Structures are given as structure tokens and as C-alpha cells.
Image (tube, rainbow, N blue to C red; front, side):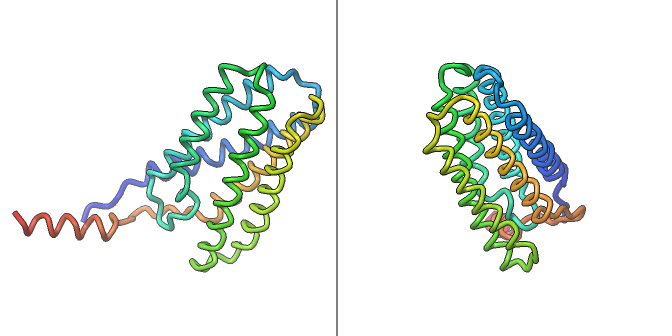
Length: 202
């Protein structure tokens, strides 16, 4: 039986880790320097959303062993990529839209991560409750950002920073604790059975 290549899984996991760390760095920068211009904020957010959307799509199609961290990333990946393009081409005039878009995306991601935490519990992953707690906190921060998108620019920068920092930490912990890469991972049983049935029909 031909073993499945682990390269897409390694790319997805590494990309997730790198982007999550970058989100944390950008979040800390927004908090530490709240007087950053709205144009720079918009450009940074747009690029981050496009990159993270691309990584999520790679993760979804990588078919890692547990199928936990990436199971909802098709929808989120497409959403982030589309929103990122919109934000990148209008970085200065859409700040309120940017905040609402990020808030909704992170709220959805938090809800999905709660589902991932419950699935992790069934898989026997001991740290499932950490993912659950962090997902709940991140979701609340996302809601807070949605309903406070019209505040002053400095406070908005701090809110965005806190949101990105929480999202970065959540995704970093989730991908490290739930994505297991096995070198000799066999193809899915369903795929193998389908191939066998197809061969018999011939």
C-alpha cells in the first residue's frame, strides 16, 4: 500500500505556527504602539488575513491524522482570503469594516475551536480544556471588537492588538497540541475501499 505524503501536513503545520506567531507579534505591536496609522493597520491586517486564509486551505486539504485542527478551515480559509483582499485594496477607508470583519472571523474561529476542543476530548487529548477556555476567551474578544468598532483610533488599535494576540495564541496552541504527523500514514480506509470496489467492477 502506498503511504500518503506528509509534506502537505508539514507545510500546513509549519505555516500555522509561523502565521500564529506573526499574529502575536503584530498584536503586541498594535498594543505597544497604539498611534499607528490606520493605513498601516489596514495593510498589515489585509496581508495577514490573506496569508492565514491560504494556510488554512492548505491545512484543510492536508488530511492530517486526527483531522481536528483543520476540519473547519475550508470555509474560514476562503472567508479570510476574500476579506483580506478587500481590506488590502482599501486599507485606510474601511477601518470600521476591518474591525467588524476580523471580529466576525475570530468569533467564528472561536466557535469552531470549541467544537475542536470537544472532539479533542473524545480523542483523549488531555489539554482539550485549554483549547476550550482559550476559544471562549477569543470568541468574547471577537464579540467585543464587533460592537466597539467605532471607538477612537488608539483604543481601536489596542483592541485589534488584543484580538490578534488572542487569536494567535489560540491557533498556535491548537495546532501544536492536535496536529499529529505520522511518517507512514496510510490512505483513508474509505479511499482504499472505493478503489477496491471500482477494481472489482471492471
